[in-house]
Image (cartoon, rainbow, N blue to C red; front, side, top):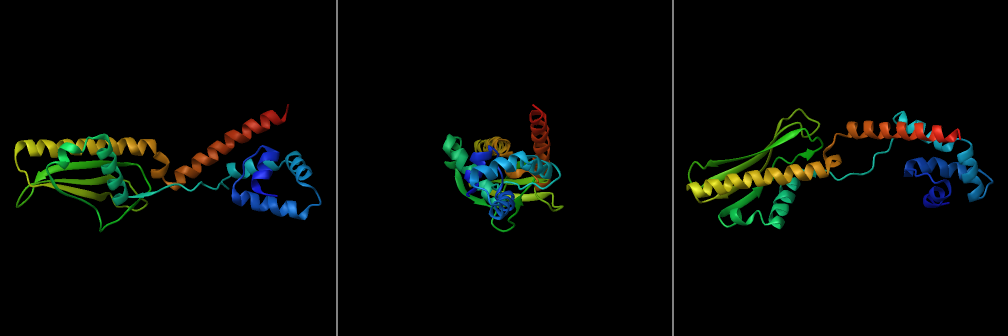
Length: 209
């Protein structure tokens, strides 16, 4: 019996690891698919799995994680698609995402900074970095990338500073819209356990009637 067949017969979604145990039970039984699924539900199979999830035996879905470099490149592409990059792009000498200290971002409790300053020899630089908690280490600063223009006039400074604000806006929106990708695994597990507890309470309530 395939996992999809089991879920269709019981009306209950399981994870691959949970189904491995169920599959062994099915293989050891003398029942057909329909009978086994009916008996599994009647004998408290759903209740047992929900209780196990509530107690911490949860399998988190695979989520997309981003590195500092990947996030910076992604946000720049988003800004280009909106048309908000055109003014800065017209005066930029280059954009370099961070290529040396690559960090896997697993916490959203950080701030994005984009500060425009004059270079020591020429032009204006827009340096971008994160500060706060962005992974499971104690590091509190993470470089994201650098933009440079050869301009050194007031309008050039305004354009670079504006680009910093635009990047901050789009990065904040992206993180809010994809918060699980930047949430600590411990927090995701606690959320899954809480949802399992709620689902178990509902199941036990309706089981009475």
